[in-house]
Image (cartoon, rainbow, N blue to C red):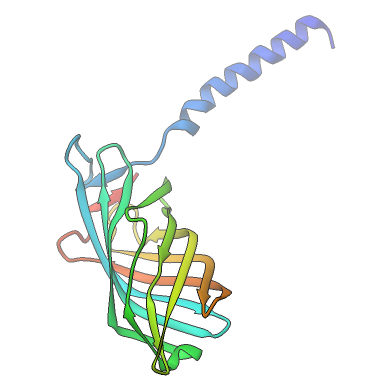
Length: 195
């Protein structure tokens, strides 16, 4: 191929990339009542539902409440996590266990990879105390990325959660899967969107 053709090909590829790059670089953003969130006007979204952790020993399900603070720069973070310990119920090994305290750590949890299809919560970590057969034990659940998928990107009323990580109990590290369905509270339901 001659030098002239190589230069023309290079210029053509550069022009295509220049047209494509802005589209690729444009990030999704959070909306509140159909509009981008104004500067210095963070909005909070409350969601509640059942979250289940499953290991090879069984599962534990609890009613959780998360507060997601959505910022004007398009970022969002989980700023509060409440696990209603009295609602927790186990299967298998965990059937006789009660969660007597919950300690979400390293809050706020950051979010990343925002698209209209959802986002991820990074570094999801809790270290609750379980009471199993009258013996209390500390548990550590770490999930590097929890995928969060809205039911309707233009008017969100619920989210599905899913992620994989580890659970350490009695000094043994197990693989754990997390899944859940969380409903947006009545005050915020349908007001948030991702575009």
